[in-house]
Length: 348
Image 1 (cartoon, rainbow, N blue to C red):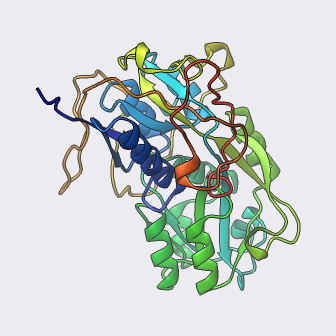
Image 2: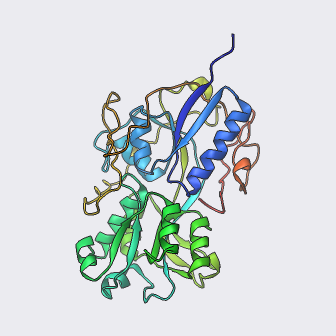
Image 3: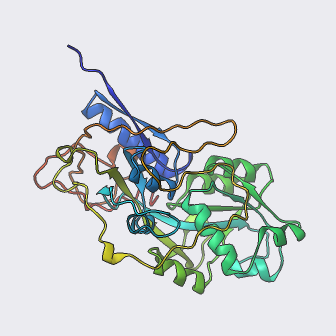
């Protein structure tokens, strides 16, 4: 009797981001090694993925350390603790926060935006993404509000993903890009080719606040995109592949067996995003597993609570991968290595 194929949703980030490309590569690898298992990559976000996996709406997703700690501890922006959230594979990518603006604008730091009252038009990601959460924290850090920005002639333009950010920039509808991405970001690189960009530095107080919440202080390196002449202060975060506790333990290799984030590592509460920017989509906060995802008008729930055995995936080497097909390999159980710090697309 032919076994029916198992189809599972796996949440990445927005289309155009390296999380999406990374998970598509892993999905292809899973299909090659285990033809009976199909991972369907869907758009997600650095906040919402934790709620969806932790409550059993989806079995696997890309996660990040700051939100993983907050989700397991029940700290904001999560309303309830999610103890069933597990991390199976760590250090997949490193993502830098990159605030890039038109090179002709008189802005070198985030503080310049408020101090000079510049009418900047910025694309903003969906509610439930880390990009959106940190963007609202950045506005607060420099004392800006969307209403005040509008009085200067600026605007915050909804963008569902990095493809849309690029399209808006090419069309002259925005003057900047705001992305948690690896270096180089394909969409930033293409935007720079269309109209020259330059990086904007984050202020020390915002970097300090974010590091207390789990991000890492970092810099955009000299030479990035051919425009960074001196290191530009920013923050970064790693990424991991997360599972719900219902995923059978036997399906994980000894080195990738789901493990809980240590509660003692919990950091101070992450601020709840201010509802100041009208969201393009909404996301369901942590709640009972029986709750269905909330959908806005014209959309429909896309995730179901169902689980199946996941194949063992392991890398055979230490070092950086250069493309999706080399991010993971079908590996042996004993001695398999998940410590490789994959700098996918030269980061995220």
